[in-house]
Length: 152
Picture (spheres, rainbow, N blue to C red):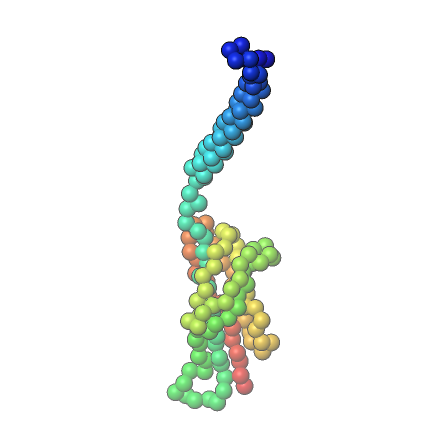
């Protein structure tokens, strides 16, 4: 095509405009996709219900020592808090574990249900109980785990 005024070839504006408008259309589509994804994300997070209070188990670990020389002024057994590794299981599968602090306390997030608390890695001469407790959803349940040492 020639420009009729000065007999100079005219650029093919149709091809140039087509490419530019194609880019504009493409970036407009991309912007719409981004906006749609952000809206879906916002709606998805807005519709998630509040999980409510967590279910926890507070374990107190004690050690009881019995025995030794007889002294009528001293009780035959003494009990105190101790730091100990604990495992919590539900239906035979471990659901939580941890180590109690020097004051003998440990709080764990656990599922609701019938739980068994067990001391882990204790010495063979210790007699440790395995208390069972039912944790209630959204509440903190307390349980005490005791290991006893019986000396001659």
